Length: 541
View (tube, rainbow, N blue to C red):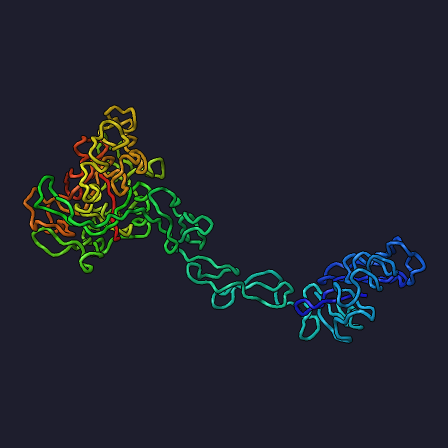
């Protein structure tokens, strides 16, 4: 006998068993594929229907995989399984075997049904015969119980209206939607696949730290190096941007004295985030690519402390009063627009200073060194592009001093000496330099931003290289010596009127230990560039 089960509206032959005495054969097709002629096989016992012959034997085989319950036993009364009474699992309430009264009915006699690519007709409720074999380019249609021409070639793909990917069903009967319609960063359907739109950015799903950009052939390609350096906190998928690691510098009651040993010029700093590390060559390279390749430029008013004073930013401590005004688009003329010009500008024109410039014309060994040889305009524009702003002098010094701790050096009161584990200064880095910088070593005298000072040289909240390595541009114009007006600086900066020089803070790899003190500064015209100066950005808390 042949037993069928209904599978997705098809009957599927799943097994058979024949009594020895009938010596029957059957053909079984499973899922409309391979046919095999199978005949009853006898067991080691007798094959008679009574128990007199072959009694005591193990019985004939009931058909491997058949639905007759009992598994391996034959039909004799003494067999270990099979359909006769006494078999292991016979009877309608056991493991699927036929009852002694006859086979279970699994199809309606006389009914045609599709099985794979065949039209079959049910005979007695448990057996069927082939009515028609559909052709290679046909499929068996459940509705008409006939062979129809395939709508499409199985497993092929296409795009339907609305950028909807589709795949042809396994039997060729219909196109089926393959997931949702193309949208978001992959809005284009082509050959049944969703493709990205040129210029879109993301983080690689298989490597979340790797930014990617969609190229002009609508394919995702890696966009620069992974965001795996210590300077990054990860990759933001919404725009494929590497996020810079920053540290909260909290407000503390009382502030600090802007002038050492003078208590009548206090500064009060509200919560602000300041980057843990100086901006690197690798980070600045992404900025240059945005300016050159994407035409990015700051807009009027960008780069202010919008989280302060109801969105108005820092209070101007200069004579004009008011608040900081942010970027002026007149300054865009100070930003190069070609890669060649950037390469020229960021490598110092003086032959004796050029070896100390960290910028390289191609990605190289300096990617984690601080960017230097940049102007105030370039530093400010970079911080705006990186979704931050230049810190004010007061904010920078508050972080370097450790707030109300009032540290002489970022790490405390101990003079740095010649050990570069506290600060990179005086040409003592790398170890063995003995206080002498050479053009042969060049930028090798400047440490990677996450190297050089170990924990011993970090500032109170964990900032690295707040003293030494490179000076850092801040927002303020140089205000000169006191007296200052107003005397109390509460979330303030000297931002108007335009004076002549902007301020550097923090010391560098070349000069003296005195420059390592948290109150040290120097000042230059904003278009000045040298290999001693870099930048560290700040952000809203």
